[in-house]
Length: 86
Image 1 (spheres, rainbow, N blue to C red):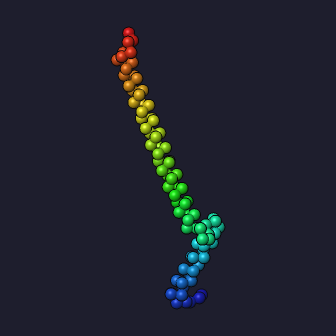
Image 2: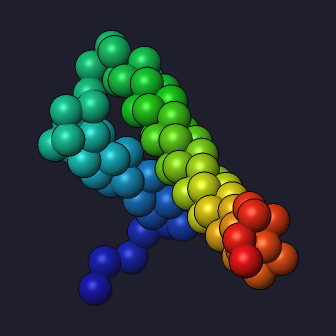
Image 3: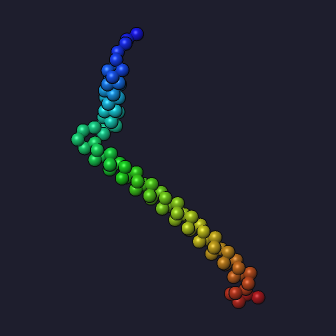
């Protein structure tokens, strides 16, 4: 068993965490001087994708709702014989 002062242990943990983070970023190609820019760009792309997904769902719901309302109106028009039917 190794005994060391708490401050030294915390410093050792911090260095190990930093090395691990740098290695993880390097493994996915996000190291170097452009890393911060790349991460901001990825976040922007993710935000744009989420916005597009949200808009697509809204559009699908609007189309479905409009279709149902038009079907109900057509049914009511036929039922009330508004188109000159007998």
